[in-house]
Length: 212
Image (cartoon, rainbow, N blue to C red; front, side, top):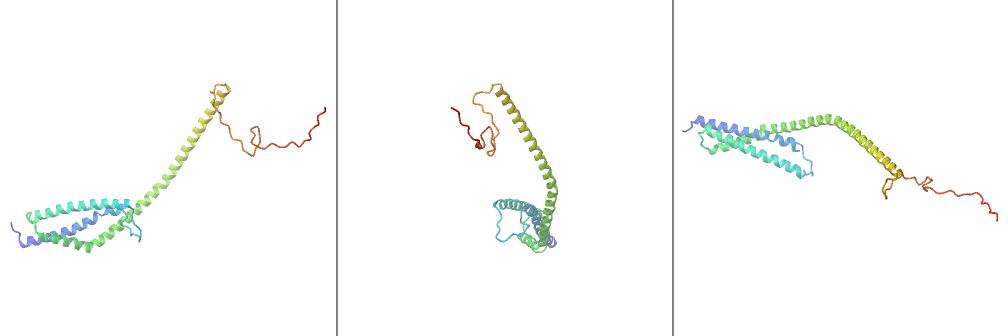
């Protein structure tokens, strides 16, 4: 079945509109990549992105291209099926490309600027919300950690005290095995005493002569 002139003109109009719509769709599916990578921010001169960031961006690019190819293929097939009885017209592909480039050079610029601005705004909101939640949470976690440390230290001191008392009792009863040594507190070097930690003072008293 041949199409009339009005049908062909309508087919070309739909192809032009579809090309522009695919351009808009391509910009919209770039939104996750702009949000989760640093492409929305201006790059500094002489600064290279890390390998991990490039890999993440590469994964997003692959998914975007794959999704765009699937959607655009389905749309073009439906266009030929609905408006040209399933027959392929090579001129339609040129009109699709013209619609895509027309959108990219006109409305697409404003759409991309708006997406970058929207991504920056979302990041600021998320960062502020995160800071509002993180600061009190950090204080609570610090308080819990300090209390836990105190309890652990107190429990360790109690266990050590009980162990020492038990060893002292066993030592007093003579039940400790041979070779067991009780730990004693160190005596400072500057102090004298029974442990011999300090120097002995000289005795300046005159010696008494012995009587033969």
